[in-house]
Image (cartoon, rainbow, N blue to C red):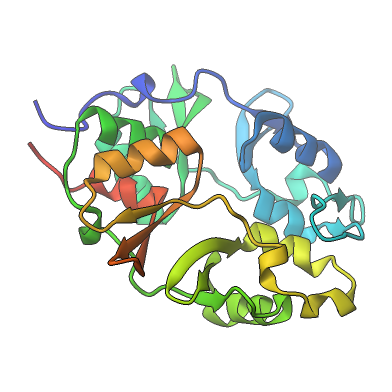
Length: 267
């Protein structure tokens, strides 16, 4: 049997998390926070899925409320925007009997982290890179993560300012920076932390990036098999793994990189 030929319905979510087209930015934010997800489906009056809204979309058009160091980001409704105004459409979808390999190929081809699942012709579930990671664990894929890494790592030093981190994130056009203490990775500064930082009073932007970075990191040796790395991603609910060799950072492994395994590996 070919690896990753299991139908996506075996790994897809059991329930589609969604908001109506007319949902306000605050309502969307509440749903994201309640379900601890980074994106939700947008449904029309007939209950059909017509788009997708992510946290990035939400904060791109929303007005950030004044923030303080360590406080969560809050979004204020901006100019009456609704889910329909800011959603990405059309959505990428597969039938529920499609193999996991095909769903993973769509994620890789479109460079996205989830595809929707149709059951009886109607979208009512989603399969994400995290779900594909479960399949990688199940198949015990022992490819070393060094073969999958993004080695062009953007980083800042732990004592660098928040302003410098913001500039570097924009200049490198990446989703996150690794925060280093010398050669050792100690945290990350992602779009989430950047959005929080942009709401800070200007005089606080000279504070060390350590004050707003995320500590939710895990470092693994480059020889670690990908099924173990996938297990860590799932168990610890982190979005990336920092790969090290002799305690030096050499690359980053994301859920999307793990999903790529499902499109290439065979028994």
